[in-house]
Image (cartoon, rainbow, N blue to C red):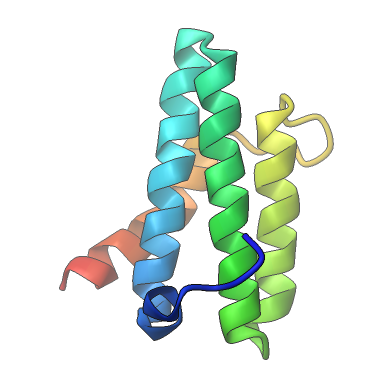
Length: 102
């Protein structure tokens, strides 16, 4: 994602993170099914959204979002470096989804 759509920039951080979390959830579903093509597609969408969030936000969130991007990329490739499960990632994103819905 080279240019960040204005609509994405205007979303509160909780909604941006909830959207990223939705793609991570899709990654988990496709991983459990052994569907590598859809897993890769969901992972790429998640990475694009994280990058868009970094671009839109910058500042204090940049360090955590950059680490998150590395963790999601690692999860796409079997979680060799960070050893973080999809369940752990989904737990990370759950509070954002709850906040975005309230």
